[in-house]
Image (cartoon, rainbow, N blue to C red):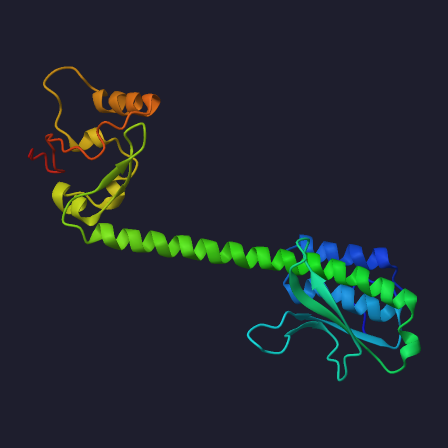
Length: 232
């Protein structure tokens, strides 16, 4: 068998483990992470061939991930995570049963454990990607709802700085959305006749500090000022 770059002709188990963990640390694709394990095992035990396959789903056959393509699987060890959830299998093929001795079996279990770390890591990455995609889809759905409302909707932080606006706000005030993001909501209100600059920001800070929500769900009328200076 051809050994991966970096492995000596007769690798030790620690060498195999180090090569696999090094690939895992570089966020390499799963087949490349598993390659040092299967090729290293075959180098340790000439005459044995091995492969890592994913767990079967929906009645389908296990999917080959790394290693030799085996014509006949003589032994198959389950690959599980720390919660004992089945993730895949470590398949071994050989021409003579004498090759499947105690040392080969012991090392196969250790290889299976390392493969479990790699598969669990890959599952975690895929779950994180799926969660991120779901959050992005939910955000798009939320944005579509807001953008199709006739009422203007503005969200601000505790300092009174605008974090988001819907399309109706742009129509009402005459600004592009990008022009409003990050500015104080006071810009959308006319200058007070009395020196009360910063009143809205202080009120928002006070509500945030007190935890009060007395304004939530209650209508309140105030004056607004469009980009062209028109007050309404």
